[in-house]
Image (cartoon, rainbow, N blue to C red; front, side, top):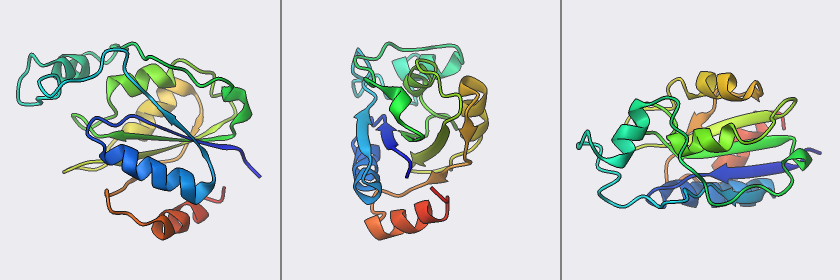
Length: 158
């Protein structure tokens, strides 16, 4: 049986809610990707081209510092990575997480939450960042049930 980690970044609490349900459904460990400098409401204003999140997302090489790390990533075979969709992709702070560890031989399964849009090309970006086996992933709503999460993950053949 695979050892599973659910790692997530949540700006508003929606992704955290889904990640907690997923970790419970899969009996997985849970890890929050926390930016060293938390995002304020002004930082997250996507309508302002000068907001912190807007500037970060314009620079594909941006890697905001994180405040914690996974103690023993080597123990995990499967890593679910959750995030809100920003500008059609994963937030830059998630890229920091993805470039911090060696994911060779591991399976990464992205999941996102979004008010609009879908998971887009995030799987391809994550493949490029990690060289891992990356599933195409899925967009999940805040109200997804634990039962629906179990059905989804059963189909992944974990």
